[in-house]
Image (cartoon, rainbow over all chains, first blue to last red):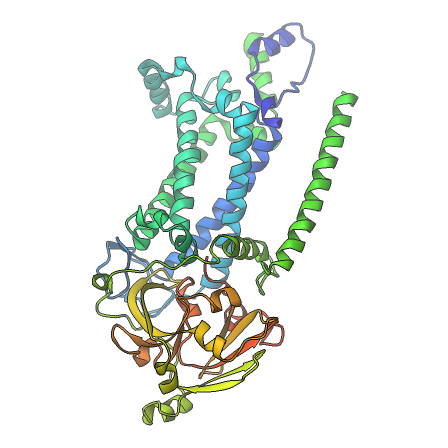
Amino acid sequence: MAGSESAQVPLEAYVASAASSVPTTPVTLRHSALVRITHWITTLCFLALLVTGMEIVISHPRFYWGETGNVLTTPLFRIPIPSSRSLVPTGYGYVLPDQNGWSRYLHFQAAWIVVLTGLLYVISAFFSGHLRKDLLPGTADLSWRSFSTAIASHLRFKRPGEAEAWSYNVLQRFSYLFVIFVLFPLIIWTGLAMSPAFVSAFPVTVTSLGGQQSARTIHFFVTIALVLFLLVHVVMICVAGFKSRMRAMVTGKVIKGCADIQTERT
Amino acid sequence: MTDLSRRKLISWGLAATAGVAGLSVAARIAQKYALIPPDHGGICGLGETLTYASHRLLTRHSLAREFSQSQISKPPLVNEMPPLNDAYKRLQAGGFADWRLTVTGMVDRPSSFSLAQLRSYPRRSQITQIACEEGWSYIAEWIGVPLSHVLELVEVQPQARYVVYLSIDPDWWDSIDMSDAMHPQTFLAYGMNGDELPVGNGGPLRLRVPRQLGYKSVKFITHLTVTDSLKGFGKGLGSMEPEAGYAWYAGI
């Protein structure tokens, strides 16, 4: 699998080449082709799901708990926005344009693509060593000391050192694992729990959540968690160096990092 | 280096060939077992086809969840709907005594049923949830005759694949495949919550399809056509929903 290419590269390799003043370009890739491709497909699908999901919510911006909920039921909470359907009493005197049709088509299309992409990523991560080497924290990372150092440097928005251009730090590892193995499965599960046909075959997917409206409400909160992750993810990329991190995720290469070492050492 | 790239080229080539072959085999199987929805064209046709095909494989015989009497939503919800037309109002004035359900198409005995006839057939009830594509839902008891009973009476021909159903409102029509049409919970419903089916909920006759979203349960049913192809109906997309931008299959 291509994922094996993203193994951590000993810095000495570059330092040595810099010292001997032979201009070489590192051929080892920061992110394997599979990681880069699945990353950007997931990004596109997530944005499509987010926009279409918001459109679907606008047609009924009220949330409930339990099996059923409608305009005659007391909501758990509601979003104070106008609706795209006149049935909903929002307090606003007007109805927004209805975009539900194409939004639903695109929502489920993007859901299929992101689920299949995610499966490909997870399966290959298991077999390529990407999971073990890049995502699971090492034993040294699991001390309070390493945690508190990582948190402190994050809180100070400290630009990460060179080593982090080649591997994820402990907080990154935990948040990626949480997104991949908790938030994504949860959003797929709650999505399926809203499908009347799917739950006819697998009723436990919805009964275990307390009902179809509970599933819808949890789906909404998991979306918020994923959006928060996205925001922090983008901020961290800007802190670490937007250009170099984007280049690494687009081309797989970390060229600038190499140049940094050369200037530091000379 | 060249060795590596040749190996890569061969493995990518093999993967691509396997992929293309796999796709064409999948398309043939899908066609044979009727796993392709009528609105499979367009940008989002892939997602629709995957949903419909996987549901047909997983849920062909599964039953919609049923609930207890105490879970019935009170008061019952009446959704907004287009104004009733003159034809409806005339029949309503006569207490729906002249309401007819006609069944035509690929059947050996094209027939017309009055409400009294439909009520004389085995009476079934189910307490199921109706979920709207907007996000809200309610639970009600639906009383009626299974559509399969009527389809057996008119003797559906073996090549039939879909049942097209029409409302008294000529712009309101839909269709389901035979798997849903013969499903034991697909009702021609004439009652609700122990009473007659209210006008606001589709009375006097509504097709109830509990494994799909509410919009498939069309109100004021007057006509059924059994067919092997949806091409001749409207734009050939299976119902008026895809024409308005919504999916034909609403089992999601």
